[in-house]
Image (cartoon, rainbow over all chains, first blue to last red; front, side, top):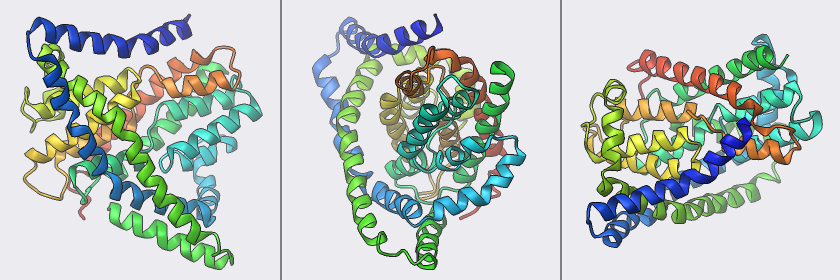
Length: 178
Length: 193
């Protein structure tokens, strides 16, 4: 039921938004196509402007994974995260999630293949991924677009939010699914 | 801050690879990753172009104005320095709405646009403004009612009901957002770079 509702929204929301944009603009009698192009024109420059930021960050994160530093970090953080009641199976996910979207999705998929998507751990992993973002990517792309490189407290804030989401995911899933 | 993180990630990688006697993989990894950075940016061009066009239409249709009025109070509380009906606020509200609806590929273009518009209002040049940091806090903590990616992941992993994590995700994402907003306020002015 819930899944059908969510899937329904997921399928309809984009066409709905586009229809609202077009019909609304027709009603306002604006020059529809000119306006669209005017907005769309910025897409290229804004995307290309991100290249140096993305290259810089992807190189650093990839090196961190390839060198084995990532693994050491998860091992180092494991006792801390275990104290927060986080199951051992999702520790690598918690460490990877803020750094790399693709890699954390892969870890999530692997956990669900191995332990079952409907197991408690599978649900915790799903909730962790669903309730947080790839902090480093968001930071890189958004500040990159603005040309801002003094990011003040944004990074610690994002990491704390991830931690809050993870702890909440574990607690809520334990309450709901156990 | 981000510069130090960048330096730390790279130098630690070199150090640890050296200690493990495993330097050979690093040089090729650097250039593959550099190429991937370009691919990711180029991959954004299409969705970015399309959604920014649609956003212009949503602006001229008056739909954003309605959204803007409906959310005026929370918007003013969260972003006191951003004019209520300007392009920056429009893009911020579009980004947050797209996030809530689980529209990842629309949220990014709107978010990038929002940052660009906020930068025009930012008197500090290359230093992030308070509003930018709050906006980042909301985006890095994720605010979503429909976690589309995870549902797809669960479905392909053979879940009997991929959406049974909707409830737990909403609660957890609210917690992470509350933590983000509190941290944003408490750390403001405490971290200097």
